[in-house]
Amino acid sequence: MTIGLKNLVWFPIENESESAITYGTAVPLAGAIDAQINPNNAEANKLYADDVEWDSVTPDSDYNIEVETVGFSAANLAKLQGHTISDDGGVIVKAGDEPPYGALAFKSEKSKKSGGGYRYVVLYRVKAAFAPAAYHTKEGNNFTRQTGKMTFSAVARMHDGLKQYIIDSQTDPEDFFTEPITPVVTPPKPPAATPDP
Image (cartoon, helix red, strand yellow):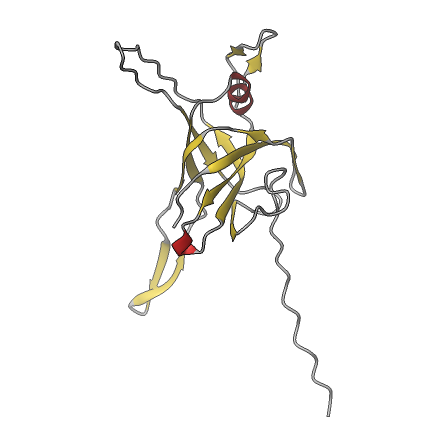
C-alpha cells in the first residue's frame, strides 16, 4: 500500500530514433499532489475453435496520466506545453505550439505494513495535453485553492518498446531522478551441452 507522492520529475526527450534515445536535464515539478496512471485497455481479440476460447491477443494500449501539483511555474508550464518564455519571464502561447515528448518519474512512500521504503515509477515517453486553468475570486475570509492539473498520454519508446518501470526500494535507486533508468534483464544461461557418450 502506498501512502505518499513526491519528487515528481520530467525529462525532456532531446533526440529519439529507432536505435537510441537521449533525455535532457531533469525538470523538477515541485508540489506533487496526485498522479493517476490509467491504461486505455482495449478488448482482447479472441479466437474460438472446438467450442472453446482457443487463443487471445490483447492489443498494446497507451496510458493516460493525470497529474496534480500545487501549480506549475511559468517556466515549467512552457517546457511541458511547448510554449515560449518572453524576456521578462512570461509564457507566450502561439498557434502551432506543440507539447514535446519526455519522461515522468516520481516516488511514493509505502506503508510500514507493506514493508516501508518507496515505490519508484518512471514512464518513458509521455506527452502533455494543453492544461486547463481556473481562477476564482476570494469571498471575504474564504478562498478556493486552484491547483495545477495536467494530463499526459504515454506510449512505448520507439527503439526498445519500454513504457513504464516500477521498482520498490528502501533507498533511491542510483541516478533515478537524474535520468530515466533503464532496467537490466540478464538472459538465462543456455543449458550445458551434454557430452557425447
